[in-house]
Amino acid sequence: MINDKESVEITIKDKNVTIRDYGRGIPLGKVVDVVSKINTGAKYDSKVFQKSVGLNGVGTKAVNALSQYFKVSSHREGKVKVAEFERGNLVTEHKEAKTDEQNGT
Image: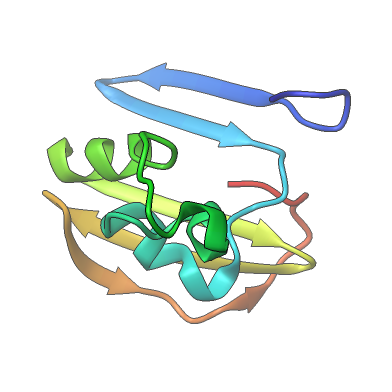
């Protein structure tokens, strides 16, 4: 859901697609899991979702698995976490760093 504090930018250039949102951002400790492992989204921490699995959070996992190269950056509370994948396999997990970027993914 997008409100006045959230927006999404989509850029397509030379067969590369970049999507940037300005929501809360993925919790920095979960960045790799959220984009690469099933049943690992913010909602799966809730007891409500322990017995039911829908399609929430599957999109980034599918894009990651089907992409030659996939990079995720989560900006949250003045810090950023970046991870890079090739064909769904983690190749580089960067350490958390300071950032001036707005929250988002």
